[in-house]
Amino acid sequence: MAEELTPISNDDVVWMEEPEMGFWESTFLPAIFSGLKNSLRHVTDFKPVTQQYPEEKPDLPLNYRGVHRLNRDDKGRVKCVACMMCSTACPARCIDIVAEEAPKDDPLWADRDKRPKSFVIDELKCIYCGMCEEACPVDSIELTHIYDLTGMTRQEMKFNKEKLLEVFDKTKDNPRDPIRTHRGVLGPASDFTSLPPVGPATQIPQGDKASKPVSTDVIKQG
Amino acid sequence: MSWEFFLVTLITIGVAFGGLMGTIAYLILVERRLAAFIQDRYGPNRVGWAGLLQPIADGAKFLLKEDVIPGYVNKTLYILGPSIAVFTAMAGFAIVPFGPVDQAPSWMRFVIAPDVNIGMIYIFCVGSLGVYGVILGGWASNNKYSSLGSMRASAQVVSYEIPLGMSIIGVVLMTSSLSLNDILMHQAKFGILGWNVWTQPLALLIFFVSALAETNRLPFDLSECEQELVGGFHTEYSSMKFALYFLGEYAHIITVCFLTAILFFGGWQFPLIAEADSAYLGATLVKVVVLLTKVLLIILLIMFIRWTIPRFRFDQLMNLAWLGLIPMAALNILVVMTAKQFDWPIWTLPLGSLAIFVAAGLIGTSGKFIVSDQTVDFGESPEGYAHVHS
Image (tube, rainbow over all chains, first blue to last red; front, side):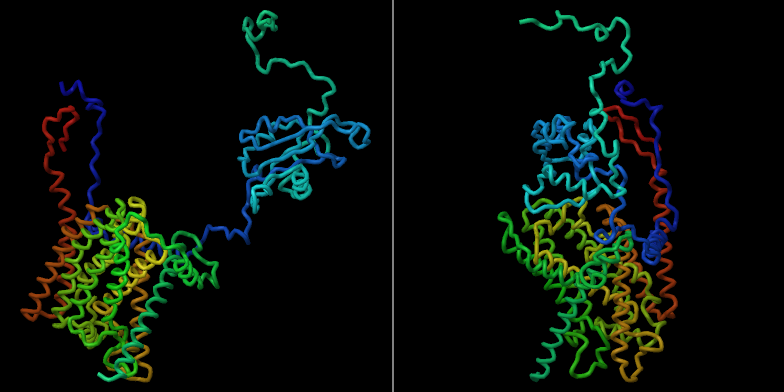
């Protein structure tokens, strides 16, 4: 009866004994003295690991994600094409974009279709995950190394287009914040003159529903 | 009692009190810097040169912070708690001589309350009253963590009062006096070899360990252990009341360090520069400096111990007092009494201390064998868990 209820088989139980204390161990004194010696060594051989922050700046990793910037292209225009991909990708929903058509009669904007009328990032809402950077098809939005962002009001922490471009002007020459891809010109999405055919991203086995073309009867009519 | 006596007393009190307060403020800075060094940090180094103005900033902060008295506390006791803590610590310090009392110039005294010939008893009475501040504060806070802390404090002090008192009986027996100055002079007569640390090393060990427990210092700060009890007895205290607890605790530590220096390390006596009969110009000052240096070294040792030894568990704390220190202290008293009764030479005392210590160590070692030789059988357990046969 007792054997049945045993949750662990007796063969699996290993009984541990606490190690025997020797004479010096049971008097505690050698352990205390060696501990004191260790403490004293830290004082006499003082090697602090603290960074003295305002004087010593931290050495950030290269993939550090700080304040955003909006990149400019080679003509000084904002690279952003107001596609809303970043604000869609944003998990914190801190990006607010209002798009407008680029003025066709202006020679500066002749080759562009769309541009942001306003582009506001709430830096207080942002969680600095970098997903906007990943989502951007034209390499416009990037995160910089600026980590010491402060402000007196919530309003001034809402960065608009001008302020984000200003961050770009401030950080573009810093070797830590290079313009990462497509220096000067718009990113890959802007090169498309016609949309390439979309193929399946992975190999789909024959006979899979996904490999068949969409038939009209799948979509409910009416 | 002339008015000059009154005036000198008042000034002595003022100077000693102010000096003590300033010393405590800077000791806290020293402790914080030392803790930082031991932990490979810098510690407070911003206010003033190397952080030297930090105590002043801290004091200003304590004074200016909002003094919160929660609505659910027992107000009288809540305010009484820190007051008692500071009062008893100051009263205990009043009879500690901080220099050669008999050579002091008439305009200056090295002890606030002169001619207290029951010095030791007075200090232990007042010192153990200090725990009332902790108990009252913890109880009045009406908070379970506070009352747990104060309960621990009371049990701890009740246990450690006994070895603390017993450890100095040997010293008092050898001197035949309870006055701190007499005990000091008795050692100073024989030079550095007359220090009680040579004749009563075991008493020093027991006294020092119990004193750490009395002052709620690590490794015995069970009453305020942050990891278990939020803040312990002072969880509900803020601003100046909190600071008062700290002042009281530190004043207590300073008193205990003075006692250790005076009882076991010959007080202001030091070979060549500060003998009992040295009367060169400024000898008095040198003696004060020697005593203060000894006290500072002991305080530094206590700080080092704080950042070296982890906190005891409560049962270990009780075991140490009742199974370790109290029997050893009792045996030590027996050895000193025997030696005094039969006029044994002085070198028998350290041998006796050593013998007791070795015996305690051997019992601690072989005690494990006694327990592990027994067969432990928990009987028929309903759950059917494996029985223990060792």
